[in-house]
Amino acid sequence: MLAMYLAYRLFLARDNQHGFNRCVLLMIYFVSFAAIPAMPFLSHLSAPEAPSATPEGVGLAAEVLAPLAPQGKPIWGTILIWIYMAGMAAVAVLTAITWVRLVRIIRSGRKISCGGYTLVIASDDRLAPLSWMRYVVISREDYENDCSAVIAHELEHVASCHSLDLLVAQAVCIINWFNPASWLMRDELMLVHEYQADMAVIDKGYNPQEYQLLLIKKAVGAKFPSLANSLNHSKLKKRITMMYKQKSGAGRRLKALALVPTLVSALALAGIPAVRAAVAAIGGSDVTVSKVNENLLSGQIVSVKRFKVANINNDGRETGVVINADGLGDKLTVSGGTFTTKGKTYRAKSLQCDMSDGKAVIKVVFPFSDQYVNPSMTLTVNGEEIPFNLESFFDNSRSVVVGRNDEQADQARSVVVLNGKSSSLPDSMAIYLDGVKVDRVKLMEMPSDKIASVTIDKQNNAIRITSR
Image (cartoon, rainbow, N blue to C red):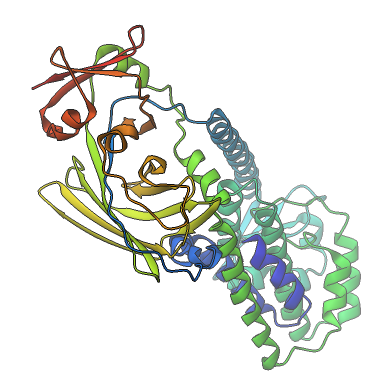
């Protein structure tokens, strides 16, 4: 929204095509929220290009078990959520106060039905003329004097349903209060409304100089914030200057196409791994008091999920990864993945998912890499980011990948998740199944639905599992 607003200000804001500009501003609101699902689709624009070397293919196996132990989510994510909610609540309260003020003014004034709208005569002579929905509010002084130009101005707001625009703008300000573009967009939309109403008055034959003097006179009146269109809301100099501009030709509307590359660039920026990682950290944070410790202490567990990297293969053009998973229930949604090696992060080019009887096969394709140093992978499954540390399965001393199938490599790396809390499982932690010590391989072979409870014994550095 911020990117497209800046493009609008640069290319369109000074043109005398107010109806078109109003539509563009409303379109920016719509696209800003509707484009969110498109971000994963366009995120490959920020992925590094694949090197050209061609190593031989390799197979490997790595296990991921979920859930057993918690991972602490970053506290800053939770703090930001609380700050966001507090800000949203504050703006909502201020909006409600403004709404109450507006309703009181309308209720307390003298009402005259004029066919299609209701004229409200307020007792406060300091109040500048305003309109809201089908109500036009003017002071008693304006009503007793010649107010035809004022009425014509406010009726244009009513006829054009400008109040609905302001409702949308205010809702965005509540939801997106931290974004300067929310407030700038609202002010810009209100300015466009005033441009439209001013031109409607001039088009009806009113003398432009006399009307401009009226605007200057009303500029000292009390403004009504945000929800209503007020005659003295917007910057007077811009409004008077706009009255002298010739109407822009239809060809100038093509400048709106500049918003398209701006949108694509903004989506690509949002797809940068560092940005997505920060968003994911906030998305995985808890607002309420965490129940993880209670679950660990009581030994209760909600569900067990397991993931196994069954194969990684490079054909010289791309890197394909096959993951087997079970314990996912009846839901499988994979929204994206990354593969990191030698300090570079490659974003998934394509995803293919199949699930039957709770067992899933996930196929992910990444851009090709010719060298694997400290390799790792993440996969977002059912909204939960699953990390895979693959370092133990490669020979990092060579640029060509070498798969390792020894037992140590097969057991070295595990990731565990408890109620959405994931972390690395320490190699030194002992695993007991029904009181008998077992290795990770035995644990991985145990069906997910056979696990009744899990207890973390921190004192003895052990996991104690009870089967059904």
